[in-house]
Image (cartoon, rainbow, N blue to C red; front, top):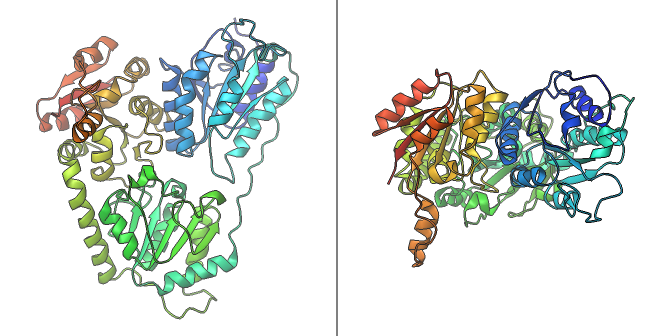
Length: 538
């Protein structure tokens, strides 16, 4: 019988509740039961995946969609190591996530005595992969560490953290109160640099804006500045939808394409906001530019991969607003010229660039574009699509799924892990129950986390799960073929996926045509459980 005994577990859970947490993802185990004691009485919903990695991916998507940190509870040892890949994915994409786990009792750390789930150095392992990992020594310290985790997500680049609470600390009585939480202020951009950025943009005849995941909270500010400057907007995968892709200045998430990279070279001023411009964005390409303005809340990013002429260290929304104020009619800044604005010429330039990008994306996406468009035809407005490290995502949905707001496509381009899509769809639906959610992934990606069908069934989530079945790992198979390497480990025996879905309690459909896909996706949104829709794509 649950009681209100307050201990180290209460210190953690009461602090979470005081911070506004109402949902956690995890799996109960022998060592974390004192955390579970307090969830129900505090009104925190617990989502139980079938693997801790699924908990991490679901929490990642929950954070992207809700804008609140995702929280994962694991048990010690294998429970924690199971979540490491998901936590590293969140680190690569700057997602706020808190992982909480128990640890060996005080005094036994590193003693190698054969304690159940004993790990050589779990906090050390997590500390190497996340922003930080902290092992606490008292209930009050545990509460402080949770509050510190949430504070670390504000005023700076958000990245996942880990708190380890020894099992004897979880049991220890606690009579304290959750610590006070204060958001940290972000950095203030340098006024001189703001003036220089505004002057450069006002004089530009071929401006271009690049936005990444660090701009997702600056939607209106980005749109206003782009329209004021008449600047086409190119995004990374994580920046997709920051400017609605129906907007005449949108070039979509096309930065990996050579046509887009050439447009960067030809622009006379490039404004890059909240992006590291890394290889995972550029796919082996390189960027050169005549004049570069970089905006980032992480000072370490301001000259990374593309040197800047002007650096602005600060929150994207605040910086873009300040630049816009300097360009607007009420500005006290004396400018030699005015920004170009939305004119027929600037709109035509953006249209030409967009057409060049679509033409280049088509050969790579030829096999998957029709499937993406068949799915898109069934999507209600404001649908969230969860992708995976599958060809149907990075050749297909990235370019041909139309996003009208940030995080409409959930795809982790940086760490590029397999198995993300299905649990991410679950996390997204938990975060936004009133928004339609669809998963679109390949057969190889599905089989990394297929057990999460059981989670979606248990929750009664009406998620269409569209699987492009090409019989294995087609991307690596194609790479082997192109290098003259004999095929090894890439042609797989794929099970009957609709039958497998039905075995989990979901609906399972085999689509013969693209029209079937459209029809079945539309039906699946009103079902009482998930529907797996498989279509063969080779």
